[in-house]
Image 1: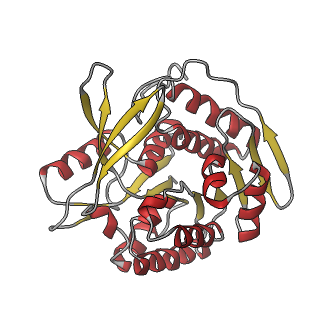
Image 2: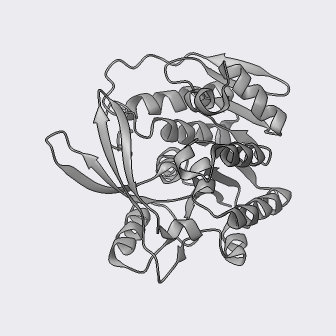
Length: 302
């Protein structure tokens, strides 16, 4: 019997620099990036689906076509007549990226507005993956609906994984962001923060402090990514650290964390081996950041 990895969030139109002053159009977004890489990493016995909302227009159809072509199940997607998809542009400086967004009327903001649709999409899946951005784009009421359905799914046997992906500009306030992210962590089997974010917005002094805080919130296991520094994997029973191999030729760090999460989760879901999972995540992320754009078909190289 097949198993299902379901990512939840926003897929956007991506305008990525080509290196010669022009931009290429694609589709990406933090949880979509992870779903795309997870489809590459997981065995065929796993189904990978994506839960979002899109419009009825041509660009929404193109997005759905891209997802299908990538082997991602679009049955969970909600269609709305009065909205379309968001867009972002990547800007690069010395390998580091910044973004400009056009997403205020994105259909994905309504992905949890229909509780019945949400329950139908999430019911029966094996892993639900979402991020702080997934929560940030929702209204407060829709977040509560999402949390309630998440609890139901866990009681029915689903596992949950969460990347806090802290982006305060998307939230009503930094305090609301911190409170919602902490609540979400308490509903998750795996929490996968990036220490740079935790330092900036929670004031954590070390990766271990971040791990401890999320464990105290109720997380089952915490995997703290920290760029080229050690990855911390902590549960209430155990704590390990792993040093990834250095990457010298960094071109674009877009989707570094997203790809790490995908490869880590794919390995962990199939083997349960933490060391092998960190190695898989670090290896894929290290390859991705040597290329431009969020989605890099580099698996032979990886």
